[in-house]
Structures are given as C-alpha cells and as structure tokens.
Length: 431
Image (cartoon, rainbow, N blue to C red; front, side, top):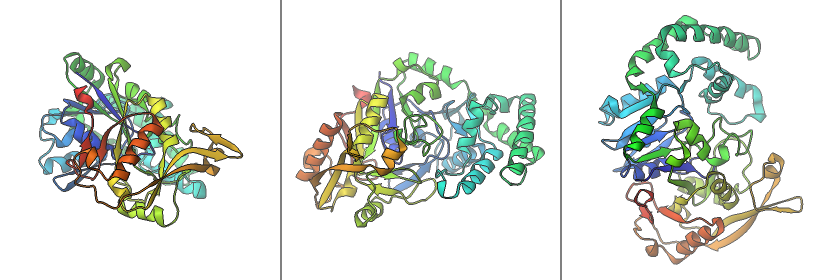
C-alpha cells in the first residue's frame, strides 16, 4: 500500500493535471487539499482536452472516489457547473463518487467583489489575482468569520453568519472600495439553492479518508498552484493565499503525515509564471516567445499568457527541501526541441553575493542575475518516445544533468500532452 502526494515545484502550471490523471489509474481515492477555482488542471485524454478547477483530476477515471478537502475554498456555482459539465460527458455519474468536506469554506459573492475591487485599486502594484474571491475567502477563514459547508447546511447558522457578514462587507465595499453593496435576500436564496443541490456530497472527509487508509485503500493527494506561490515559502506577497507545500496537505485534507509515503514534485523542463512578481530566469526576447508559443503557455483558468524562461533549479531545490520531495516528474520536455542552447539556472547573483538557495528577500529576487549552466539542444522530435534511452543524446544529457543539479531522481518524463506521451521511470504506487 502507498499513498502519494503530487505538488507543484515551481510557480504552478507545471502539468499536475496530467500527472495526477496518470497516477489515478493506480489509486482508489483522489483528494484536492487546498486552493480554489483559481487553479486549472488540464488533461488530454484521447485527444480531448478537459480543464478542471475544483474537482480532482481523478474524475475522468471510473470507480474512483474524488474528495474536496477542508483546505479548499469552494465557489458552489463553479462546482455545480463543473459537475454538470462532467456528467454531460459521461463522467461522475454516481453522486457518491464526489465528497466535499463539511469543514471546507464557501466563497461568497462579497469575496469576489472585494477581490476584484482591491486589484483595480492597486494599479501598477497589483498582485495578479484571478479575482475569483480566493484570497478574501481565506482571509475570512483566518478571521474566523468564514462560512463553512456545515454552516451552509444549518439554516439558522447560515442566516446568522450571512447577515452579520453582509452588514460588515457592505460597509467596507461602499465606504472604502467605492463599490455597490450586496443584497442579503438575493445571496441567501441563491445559496440555499446551492445547498439543496450539494448537500448529498457533503461529509466529514477527514474521517472518511482515515477509515479508507486504515482499510488499505490507496490515496492520491492533488495539490494546486506551486511551491513558489506558497503563502509562507513563495515570493510573498506575489503568492496565492494557501499553503501549497506538503504541510498544506495534512491540514487541508485532515490526515496525518505518516499517511503520506511518496511526495512527487512536478516541474516543467523550463519555467513559467502567470501574473506579477519576481521571475529571475524570465526570457523577454525571442526565446521566451518561442517557449510560450511551443508550450501553449496560456493560463487554463484565466487565459492569460504566461511569462517563460529557462529552468530555475534554485527554485526547484527550494521546493524539494520544503516538502521533502522524493521524486520529480519532469513535464514538457518536448517543448525544448529545436533550441540550439538550453539554460539551467544553478544560482543567483546579486550585489556581489551568490545565492544557491532561494532567498526570502523580494528585492534580491527582483534584481538577481541568474548563474547559467548552458547545454546543447536537440532537433529530433521526441513526442513518440517510450523509453529514456530513445531520447536524443543531448536530451538525455539534459535530463541526467538536471537530476545531478537538484540531487533528486526523476521518476517520469512527459514528452507530450497526452496520457500515452509519457516515459515512466518509477511508479510511486508500486514502491
């Protein structure tokens, strides 16, 4: 028996959806443990593309239990639309195959209004939020004013909490943000409708997971975003509002650390970032544009173009250390085909000092110059490759050198978007 966690080792968008989809074949349960519908996990199965925002990627496999943990903030409207879309295509037909934690917090309309208004007011200093209310929902959670699914299920509790929150948020919206106020009755009635449609899925998922783990079921934990967007360990304040590292799994799924046997970090063969914030290895010329076009680097949730650069091994090593990553799944190696030279950032240099570890200073990150190790590229297409030894020699050298630099083994190399376009070196569920 093995339970496996999959987390992003960069700034998100690493291809976690595909990897989770692959590993789900060997799992019984798939769990999302943090984030909200600011995440977009893209899967390509049989040439058909699916983007999931809240429901775990295991939904495309029959007979799997999908769990949305207590660490996720849930927009009920988005969730219901996602459920309906999957059912229409023949997935998630059994309601018992989706479970939502009764402790998960609910995103409310005022969260989205506040999120969008604040970002407008920041102007040039904007963080790059998706405007979907994720940050304000986590704020209310920490402020102990949030509404959980268990509160939504209890009519009197819901009315009391909603009335208090609406009164407070309306003052803030009108006086500070200069925005329209919101209607208690309209929100109340809408969310009561959501309650009736979602209550069949709501349960104590922490207990559910514990019972299944004790029964020998194999669990796959699916993270959202990436380590460098972690609210504690990322490029603060240009981060998300949750803990994307392995510690967020235990608190966000309600399981103990001893239940996790393998921690897989997902890293692209290069680096991307959406939105604002420091990005030491960003390529702003023709090479960056080529990476963006060849890699179709546009946000699955927002459609925003991603900033692109060579692989930042400093950031990946940081992710490995913070989460105790036991293996790396390297994605989008095929995108590097056709480049004459390929860079790997092995350290940063700023103000006469060399940084081999990821610095906490935003100033250092914003002005750091990468210390490059340059490698020869390859021209031979690799999308049909099935074994590592079949890759072009320079591609093999790139992969093996990367293992040496990050001091962690690669367990998988993705050479295309499809399930079948994968070189599997080690299956964590089999070890």
